[in-house]
Length: 359
Image 1 (tube, rainbow, N blue to C red):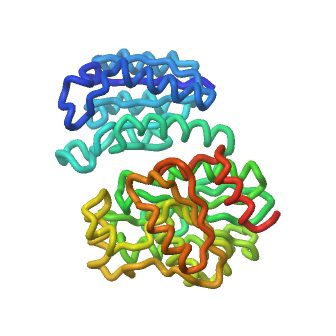
Image 2: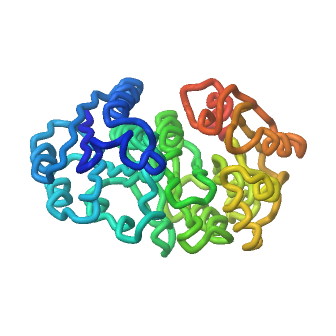
């Protein structure tokens, strides 16, 4: 697979321009890192940067790539011509921004480029480029259908059909807008390759009208929507990461469908502890508590529960999963941090798959 990496105006100043916003990596550093990530994924990456709109348009027209990753810089907010160029070629493009453009000056929040792209990733630093590559690989290797399950713009999910049981996946990200369902795509694609049907859902988060109870209600609604998709509802599992683990535990006993098992990956299980900790996500945990979310995720329900947690998790301490284990869940610990649990190539994922309903 070939991917063209395109950077717009002023991105040649990376490492020098506002490092507190864009980081200290130079454009050369970034391009080298993306090339390495591409090699890990079997992707050949070619890179170019230009301060001129026309040169970027010509690069899009001339590209023989299978996908495009583009950070248009400030052209994001002004260039209909660049958007038209992306729309005119039959190549999926992912828009990436290093900073959280939704949390900066109001004019930065609007993108003219997003409608011409298959996905937009922002606010994740240079790691967003890795996520963009992974998205292009996942959608090419295991295609999906994006389906709406409710009226809110966030009420969508990516459906990959297999001939086996249904697995509903719920992403994490501390209920923040810039963390979305793409983070679960590697797991969804792996499960579908194994024959499972996967339903990788989006839900309302802080700033989109539903941190609580909206996020929990959305998961219940999405799960209960399965019969309308013509899916096997006799065997349903929930898999949630981080905040998605909290939601999976909460929703498991509230769906009309019988859910078993629940698999949580580095789950948040104690909002009160997180809110008082001052760590990443403390503010969002406090917001949920103020909105009436249970301080502790329900630790017991009829479903079998498996929880997998990295001993070096830098965001959600292992103690959150240990509380589930004390209530009867099976606990598997791994070496690694918060996102290591999302790697389907590791042995812990085999244990998760073994826990799922048999095909």
